[in-house]
Image 1: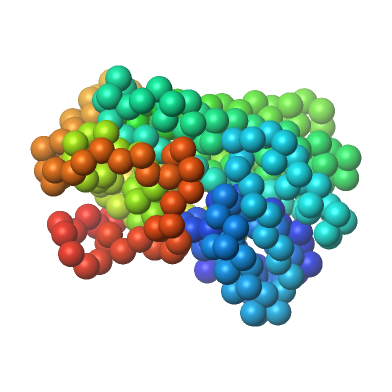
Image 2: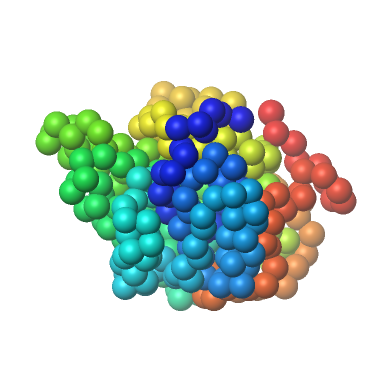
Length: 308
């Protein structure tokens, strides 16, 4: 666990805070005394997370937010400033996915993935950076994916969105460097497949159970990376040894790596996964299931998918 002593009284906005990385990060920084502004679409679940954070002695507010809606993200920023007077750190974590052959996935789902995973990050980045520029300090952390560096079939809109997040973050860093602003930081986190409720929330039109591309990682390393970036910013952090190797190899032999990943993805999702009916998941609207940090795929029933 990274050192978090420097987070006392820091005001931290976290989107996607009702489960997965967002919830895990919220619970990780609460004991350090960070003051939290938690955002997600599920108000009751969000309220529960806020109470868990407050139980260790910090302050936390919950703001029901669909990051795909610009006005709601603007209100999220306003709520943080109204409550705490400023924002020190903004984490763009909210995300959804749509699995299936491109034309088998309804266009509505593709659009919603782009709106949530890319426009949601753009909106959050816009309001956070405007505030940081005015203050002369702040840290923006955008959660992307290794699929933002290396494409995978059957994740078309998700891959497009994550490529956009990686590019957006890099462009923002360039702007800040050109302007000589060295106390405002933009960080990008690139996890591999992780044992969060992502696959419980994804819409799925493959005809098979939603199956992560192995290896599957425990969420804690990604949570630790997000927390570490709050006090020790870096431009990009790839999570997992396999992810680091794949990104490095892709720069040298992109076609080889992409071909191997395509074959692995097809094998796991279409040849090995059990049959299942199509589902819309949480793409078009929130669902009740999937309120945990760790979804339990690394342990328990089914074929084990292990981290490296």
